[in-house]
Length: 346
Ligand code: SAH
Ligand code: SF4
Image (cartoon, rainbow, N blue to C red; front, top):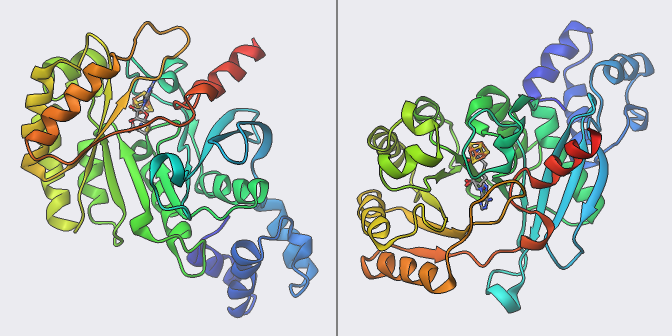
């Protein structure tokens, strides 16, 4: 998987005419060629050189969970036999009142995660490596091939911390949004982060209107410190200062993701602090009842407690959704399926 610039440099080194770049980009991203051999209008010698260096399908499909009208989770194998997972979430208008043409893909950015949030399956096994831009983009291409559906909404909420893989993330974003690439509108792409302050500020300068979601999960340092080690490095005040920078540069609302965990962060007093914080940024809040993870003792609160939490936010004028979860039954929380696969290997 290549960007326009990388391709231009490569063709120059091979003493090939510049128009070949357009031909190749067209084969990769529009015609979706799965091998370099298919590119019949390129000289064979060039195809051979490219095929050696740039595999067009760096991921191999291993397993799908779910069905065409539900959330589908794809387990994908990388060339080095590691696994990542990607989740396709169809809109179900009857149930959730969403636009029916929406196909959201939740992609992974790393194998494992180094941030070790206490509630998260991705962190459980530690960090293995960053995904390359090609491996990130390939998740979209492969799932479109497997499902026959066009992905038109993208969230970086799979395994890994996307902002800890910053340059590959930016390269992937370039390919995903470009006219010559996958042409997914930047406003339909959300990057989720546990709160890496310097990278949030840097990403605010990315020249497109991508969206930002913050995994907040605790409205104050006391609560957040208990479940997210990253908070000791970038405490809530610092995080919110970075988010104000984002607000100044981007013309759209930030989303605060908030998992409701029983006995940890779901009491009314947490909701009051969260309401103030969210209002200060004019941010939206996404409440997610905790999805149980094998081997972890956390639980979701009762439905009544979740609703009470949401009502406190709504009454304070904060736009909040209590996410009706899709995929609860297929280990859809990030990292869960891959963790099972890794355990099978042992
Ligand atoms: N590392 C980034 C991107 C991963 S997003 C981040 O943390 O934002 C994955 C989302 O799923 C995060 O909001 C994460 O907090 C949430 N999550 C992790 N484990 C979960 C669980 N068991 N139930 C519900 N949500 C979970
Ligand atoms: Fe990593 Fe995000 Fe999971 Fe935290 S919530 S361990 S940052 S993937």
